[in-house]
Length: 102
Image (spheres, rainbow, N blue to C red):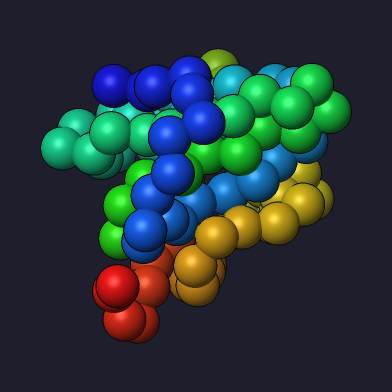
């Protein structure tokens, strides 16, 4: 479940996206693909920061359902202004993670 707050995470990972359709769909897809995770969402009007603890993944097919249209992973990268942690991208998913935890 998403939490709209300034809660601080020690091992935060996740995307920072330009506000808009892709950010809204990313929130929905991340929550669906990571049902055991709690997300902290910070809406800064021009951009949205989405974070969780340790690791999260977003699958292309889940994002396509959220958007209601086909999407290619490079399209996400255009909206991705920054991210927390490390990022691993593939044709079918994008993973945000940490190598070490605090």
